[in-house]
Image (cartoon, rainbow, N blue to C red; front, side):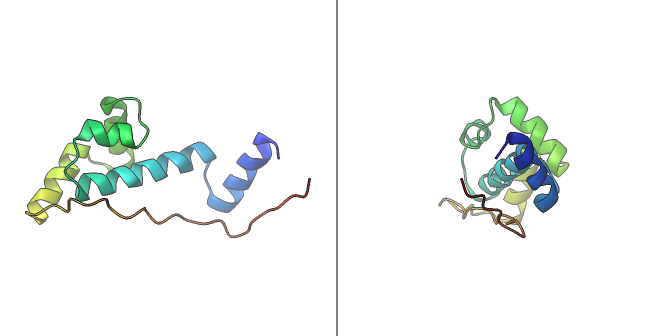
Amino acid sequence: MSRRQIERLFRYELECSPVRYYRELRLERARLLLTQSTMLIVDIAVACGFISASHFSKCYREANGTSPQEARRTRLRQSPHPVKSDPPIANVRLPRKIFVEAA
């Protein structure tokens, strides 16, 4: 399959580009780590594939309307005892159809 065909299928099935979908997965994982772990924000940024904490913060704010620091503060006000284990993997929206092309 060509790159363009894959992009078309993503748009048709998931209504977004492959790059955007992957970024949303990374941001969802980061949100879970922020709210359910005690990891440093810079460590979360690196663990989720962002090049720097500032880039992560910018992307997180655009996606969630709040900074990572504010998200963590909100979590701390709601629960005085953060979960220290790894959070579950985020739910992933699966495509409606699976296309298989014989070689």
